[in-house]
Length: 149
Image (tube, rainbow, N blue to C red):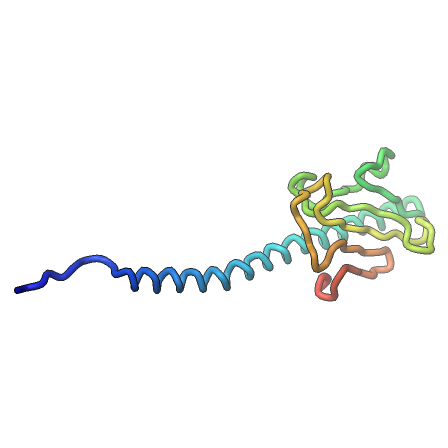
């Protein structure tokens, strides 16, 4: 009696392929998510640096910094971008400016990038770094050391 060779895959071969795919996914997905998080933090840091450049230009003309937020109604304050991306809903950080602790707005300003508020992408969270900040003295701060490379 002659046996015909069956064409196709055995159940064991399929299971081996699925296990390999699961292992690759288990390694790749967290790395991808961390890369996305780093990119979004970069967006927040870039927005803070851009905002600080605007503040320094404003200071050179008016010898004072300007506080602003998304709720600002002052015409001058509205010239400052309160979101980190191209538009509010596509942004991951809401930007605001206020006087540094213990100082007046004339002497020092701190810009704060708050992640995932109701006015920007509310689903975004950064449990490690939280809010990013930059003041007019160049001091950077966040919830962890690795947030400002």
